[in-house]
Image (cartoon, rainbow, N blue to C red; front, top):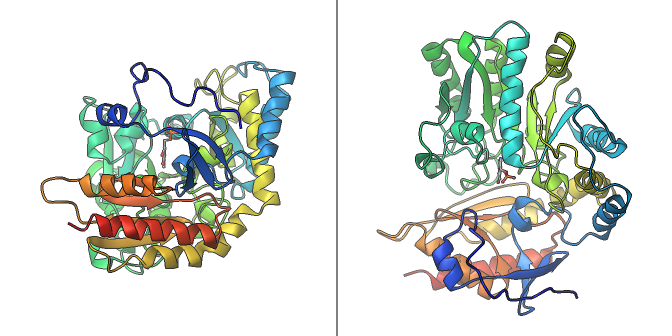
Length: 441
Ligand SMILES: Cc1ncc(COP(=O)(O)O)c(C=O)c1O
């Protein structure tokens, strides 16, 4: 164990992201190291990771294969640009990603995060239409309760009020589909059987704005950050049909649903509907080095790149697109994805995980439970006049008792590493059940 300064002297300088800085700094929770299914606090207490970090450490923590690949690459070459230059490992990483994307979606643009992937995907969609002479297609359609990160594109197309209100006018020419959640279908296991017709709302937006103004629809196959909203059976098929009918590109944000989380390589495979563009991040490198990517269908690449006049075809990119260390981490992670059969492990554990989640039905204030693959959302009745308070206290109780969960509003989201075993789920759900009971009042 090699823990550097387990307790920092001063918490002031780090302005923490998406954090109640004042309450956190008064009562900090520090994770000092991690291995397999566990985090260890700065006082060396074991905490089961019920969230794969932030939905990202799918292969479990501290995987030697990934660490060594990063170390090797750091010693060979720390950095080289990918603007008008190349280095082999970035091309190898892109080819590795293309091994597991749906057929035809083999062109990979590298970013450094899910947010950058979302904005990149939206820009590629706009550039695609323009390259084909349809530059009137500038409108972007998202969905209520969608989360596509924090860039101006993803934030605007995203559908979370609190993420938008602080930041002014956002992007113009954006509209939203309704979200797919319905409390009338509470406690559904897996995909709800009804609700596919919600996709038909796209017809209304086409009628309102004109198809010739709409570039793309972007949705998460399963909405994660707003509390695990599982799409109804047939919903994505319908969205695909309507996009095809009106010449609109379908973008999936697979930042959470990629890399085995739903028991398949990507959500597209599990849900049987393939988009034109898909984003990814998180599980791409098991979160060991930040990296995101956008996989595009061949037709998109061809239209933009082959159709362009001589010169740079897409005026977009990041200094660290295809960073050597991130590329090394991605290759090692995808190798583990195959050798550990992470999607197969998720499939094998799905019923056990769903049983555990749905065993919480009947506990005080549990008003809905939903799940797909190794993701579950447990919705609590908010305390009158104090939204989020109950979930925050459940979170703290779980943490104190050795289980890391995640909360969003009054919804608990669980997404353990895909190496989770029944002994872990037993502990996660029994600690969570106790915490929910303890916050009954
Ligand atoms: C679906 C989705 N898109 C985008 C993002 C943003 O990713 P990042 O935080 O890496 O920018 C997230 C993060 O949770 C996400 O869940």
